[in-house]
Length: 599
Image 1 (cartoon, one colour):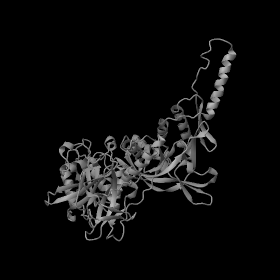
Image 2: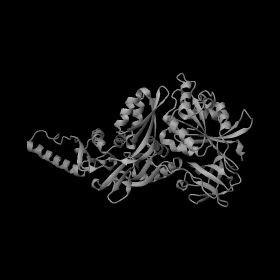
Image 3: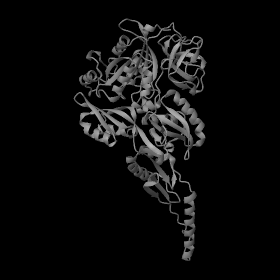
Image 4: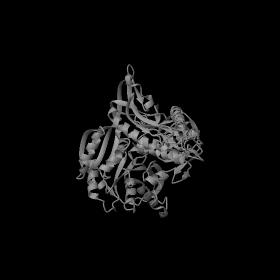
């Protein structure tokens, strides 16, 4: 067990692509956790997806031993590398709850961005000691004085508080470690109190079962402790206890302030609740830790297996994925088009995309996703508001007394020369301007109130395009406000295809109807009969296209003879086509569903 005075628990937080994972790699090297042979690998980004996309998706924890150059004592540093994209803010907030300090990394060339500000306030809410660090000072485009002024003016730090580093070549990393030891307080808590520990993360291991990551707040945990979960009241006997140092390292005990893991032969992922409090069954603590606030998903869509027989594998995969992603929610649902699947909630569109890719790669599944929707609220005459997260749940138009949609408070940090284009674009998406604030000579911070449905699909890409890649954004839920809500249905030969149905503002229905119908006309292959594609709101058809039937020359075998012979064959073909149109099934390729998501 380590002396509490020698423990430092800290996170690295930043906007996406500001060098968090590279800084973590240099810290691992300097503390001897890995050799120089691993240079340039993002060691804590252990998913293929993270390496391919160059983003951190999952917060990673590692314990490091570092001998201070000032006092010569050896410290145990528990480092948590966190994601930077707005869709994974919940991962950051979970990690910060297990820490006493945070290193706030800012790119020397790009300066303060939207997620930098958001993560700074998250750390403040958790009462953490924050160390500002300007990274990538070796770049030719680095402008350290400008970025220093931004940090001082926007975040309120003093010039002398700001560290300079280049994670790529290792400059300033030792100074960062020394500052962490000096600035980040030792963990609070009392080793003599009954055991109280926070479950802040989990992962599934094929051999060990569920691996539970904990932060011990009070008391001590050892292999003989019979653990009790205060939320579920379940008890567990520890099979293995230890800490994580790029691999599982068993230990005799975890003391007050330490971060580690345990396994207890837990095979059902649903037994563990992230944010639960663990205590000793024989000597329990009096009250649970506050845990985490429940995150409300902002985007919903249906996930179905292409092969209905894969549903049991999909259910198991989703249960295991939920362990490592507490912000992901799901419930079973049935669809006329796809059979049995799950209605899933996500924090944003990137989150949805990552979950789909993880399910397909890690669990070898082939999936179909329906059109993403936000959660609307609808009130019928004489009743309370009900949540509507799927078009099938929307009441008939004549029954709706009032409809509301979610609005978010949108923060954008953009170059000054892009103000006009960005403001016009935000207003075209029904955004309402709130305020602006200049950050130095070349940047401006804009605040808009905007419907969530307008920003979940391609808003971020468009902002990046308008600002030549220099814009960034962050958003948080504000409130539900009145809206004109309609359901747009796609009919294939007069039959509603529920997978293509979507909820939207009335003003957007006409343009979306035409875009959907013209795209589907190109994607649906020609059949032996004519296929009519229509987009409708209620009984009103907004757009219509037809896919011509495949021509078949039934008279090809006729070499001369009377014309009545050919007419007889044509009449027979006409009857067959009429019957096919009644009973023939239109095969819609999977690409069509994926393409519709992009419209």
